[in-house]
Amino acid sequence: MPVHIRLAEAGDYPSLADLHNSHNPFELTAEQLRRFDHRSESVDPHFRRAVAVAGGRLVAAGEIRARWADTVQPGRYWVAAQLADPAGCQGPGVQLVSWLAASIRADVRELAACIRSDYLSRMPWLLKLGFTERFVSWGAHLDLTTFDFAAQEAVPKRLEDAGYRFV
Image 1 (tube, rainbow, N blue to C red):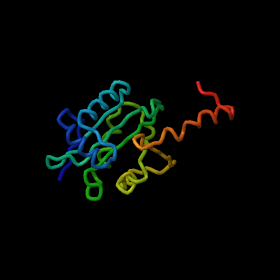
Image 2 (image 1 turned 45 degrees about the vertical axis):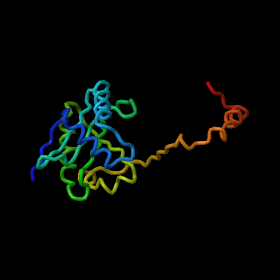
Image 3 (image 1 turned 60 degrees about the vertical axis):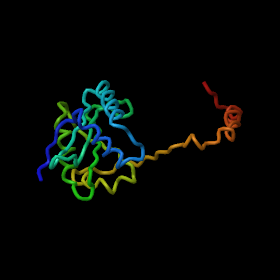
């Protein structure tokens, strides 16, 4: 079945949110994702979100941006993509990332992707494109609904006594 790739449109956001939520523990609504894209477009002229559609259904979605953590690195662009069926349709991932890179009207010298280690098994198509692992990072989350703030009250005093200054 042929895959058609195009820029995301307003009517795509409910399906984009469903795809995002099926792959991510941090759920977004269609409206939150649309606002995220609007903000991204306002600070990064290279930001694009694209969709891959086959047989009338969304099979992949992706984005490309020049900014990562509010820093632009000339020639380096960051890509992300999600596949509706990672095991059964890796071709759209390759096509989508290639399409996104070609859509940038600038000197693209490097594509970078930052992927959680628990997502790697869903991303074998990155290897088909020639991506190689350059670093491993660690992310942590603190559940503030169960965190015991009272147990940590003495920490700032201990740090100040050790010479740390809080501004």
